[in-house]
Amino acid sequence: MSDIFLSYNREDQSRAKLFADAFTAAGLNVWWDTALRSGEAYDEVTEAALRAAKAVVVLWSPRSVVSRWVRAEATIADRCKTLVPVTIEPCERPIMFELTQTADLSHWMGDSADRSWAAFLRDVRGLVGRKAEPALPGAGLPQPEAPTVAETLKPGQCGSAPSLAVLPFTNRSGLTEDEVFAEGMVEDVISALTQGVNVRVLGATTTANLSRAAITDIPALGRQLGVRYLLEGNIRRVGTNLRVTTQLLDAESGTAIWTAKFDRPLSELADLQEELVIEIAANLDTQVHNLEVERALKKPGDITAWEAISRAWSAYRLYDPTAMQLAITEATRAVAIAPDYGVAQAMLAVTQATQFAFTGPNDPAEVQRIRTIAERALALAPDDVMVLAWVGLALSYIGSANEGERYAARAVSKAPGVGTIRYGYAIASVMNGRLEMGLAELKTSLRLMPGAMVVWIAKMWIARALALAERWAEADTAVDEVFALNPSYPHGHVLKALVSVKLGRETEALNHVKTARQLGLARASAEHLYRLCAQTSPSLEADVALIHALYAAAEA
Image (cartoon, rainbow, N blue to C red; front, side, top):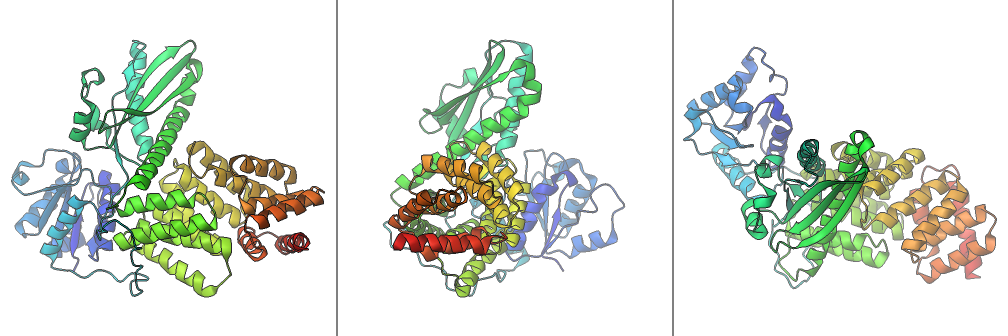
């Protein structure tokens, strides 16, 4: 007997999966059949499962309310006193169910900390009568205690990415064909932003009927929509180009906090429209993330797990041992606030794995401890994009690049337009020896995260991939690009030294190793990281021996 029978329309399958996964993560058994949603004869097995379920969760949407199968399932559930309806998209429910109390989760996209979801889950549990949670990897281990900080920690206070609404774009050219383009641009930008992980964007129907000219009170609109940010834009013709100007507004104050212009030739617009949308969405996603990190860093107390993660990311991108320890502290804080928040566990795994890669030594017990954290993150949120990406990176950094790349690839398949997700996949690919794939992904990630905090790290990995491919002159130039952004990265100097030897510049190589030592990078740590990054390279041992010799000469 299943705890829950999930009733939905086939076109809502992706949303239904969110519910099925969340119920399963909460320890409830779910019956949902993706095979019997296209009008086949009603299966006896399905009906038996429906009647035996302790709770029948019906997902109402404009598509399911006209489905005779969903209506039939809801009717049977109502008769059996097991009906628990929920609206996943604004719609008019069948009249016989209008008086049935129905939760509204049209905004919900899988966040286990969402209050509306938590209330709905309690209702379902009340009907099912089950309280037990599933056993998770690492569940028997002691969870980290909260670091001593000034704020008051609220267990379970996960928080989430900030919300944003896209206002109708203004057509300043006055041409009818540009009006159609402006409307389509809003829908396309929203669609692109929904792939991201740094912002939650409202659907196009939320603002479609608004008139930008009639909006006079931005803070009031922000409160009405319940968002932190608003994006407005306009299009106009400038010579032979079409210009799209966007402006990000703080919904609370109504002030503009970021603006940008994007130009495309009118003659090529049909071919370049998708590229334009990606560029706008990528810039916006990065800007919002940077703003949220700044906001989290300035907040004195009572932070959410999401804000602690943002603070961890701010330290992580510095990529040095001291900052990485701070990142681990903030990630530990996130886990202390919300132990069952998969994203927090994944951030803790990747920060500790990166520190392990930087400093070593290659301790099997430490590797297993980090793997346990990563496995717990996956058990808590197996389909979360950020969890998949960070777990993939963490596994790569503890020496399991082949496994890490698989998880990172799954993240990319779910969010191909997010630069930081492509960046993680690229690193795993390089460590796994797939150098050309890694280089292509790194270049794509840079295009998709302009102005992001980790741009210089992506460039460092480009240099590392070129060196592993023995493209020494290109690697030499690439390391110089890294130094232009961060001249104090010690592992960059070790790579530069290795490349310099390959290009016949021994004296320069020795000077770079001396610089790395002055920056605090010990020989053992330099060799440890190089082994992890080049674990599939046929010249690994020879290169490690060269690094060893350079350090010996520098220490003489």
